[in-house]
Image (cartoon, rainbow, N blue to C red):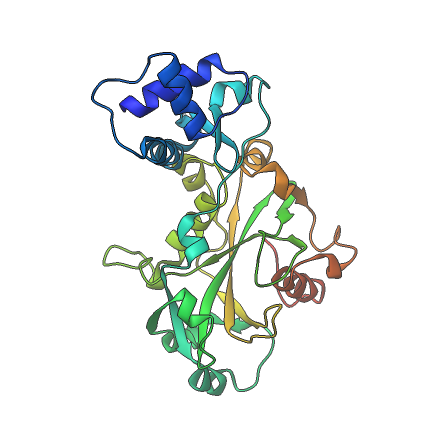
Length: 301
């Protein structure tokens, strides 16, 4: 184990409260746990980075867990009820929007859609999305429309619903899935389908949960042979610059899987559309999907 992680484990095992990286380092110096070969002016930043990397790469297998932004505890204390619930940190790349997304020219896409506002078979417009543009630019360029994903997880208990992520461009409210992006890097020579949609969907689940790679790959794609459907959506700022693809997965362990999502997003299984009494409580993409499901235009596996 990395020296910073060993030091953190020793300090956190003696602490009853979650600590920041700076507090862990201060305690380690008081307890004389800092090895001689560790030095530098910003050791607390290095320590914070090592803890974040360990949680990101090892997920449920990590010895550590976040309980709030910048605060860490031993995962065993969470399991024993000794600390507050785990906090799943947003991906830094999401915050900075430093990745490429697949985009289409607005005029060409409008021509291909021929004024349609309902569900569209994605293969009929897929060839329009041939440009890769950084998200932070694509969102501001009125000449472009970029691809999004709504990843829905179904089980015998219904559809996974949860609160929309903070700052979502489609507004607040509950969501019937996980909104993600189709990145330019999702498809490569080894992808078994164009655009790397399955990889993008499973990556979206990983970025918004603490589920392990093994648990995520246990999910089965619902009706993978059926043509993908999508819809044009206007965001909460009135920008008509997104096409959202609907992708569904089947979960065989609903009681376990729902616990992988942070408590502040209030995850639960919901019968859709039967248990959705008011679509105004949903964010925009989910609201539109539920309306289509209620009309029989789209089915939930």
